[in-house]
Length: 177
Figure 1 (cartoon, rainbow, N blue to C red):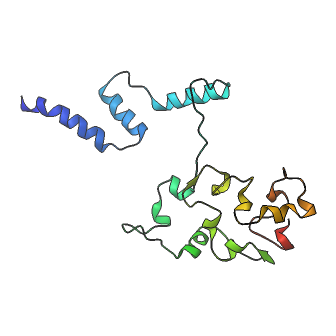
Figure 2: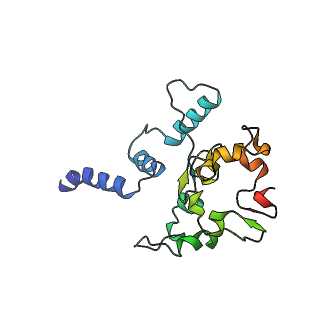
Figure 3: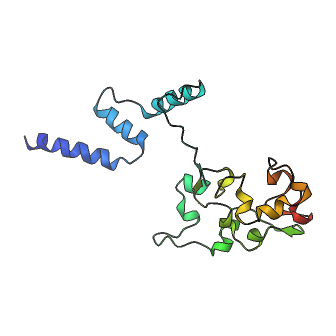
């Protein structure tokens, strides 16, 4: 008779121990109960509605881009466990995985100083290439917009900087492509 009283506790422990991921919880709950909605089907239905142009009642959040090791929970690629300290000095960390060879004549200042985080987020960002802000105004975080606009070559404000300039390095002055 005592075993029947402990079944709810056993059930709760099973659900808690099976993980935090929605698919893991779904599989565990499906084992015990019929009719548990599949979270993946809900996502697929929402994607189909959005693709069809039906966004009624939904807010379209900007997609989040994640750095590979962060997305796959391989924190120890950059951090020591359990202290969370970095595995290398911050100015050398990115080059552990990313091939960064400043072998061009002109190298962007943050890159040469190992300051990747000036432009890129290390974990996730809602902007392409894990940039820290919108790409349209991104360069003006450091570069003076008025001084750039004064240059005859920059008369068309709709042209993105990276159309003509390489963000990291170039053999041409002003990082021209």
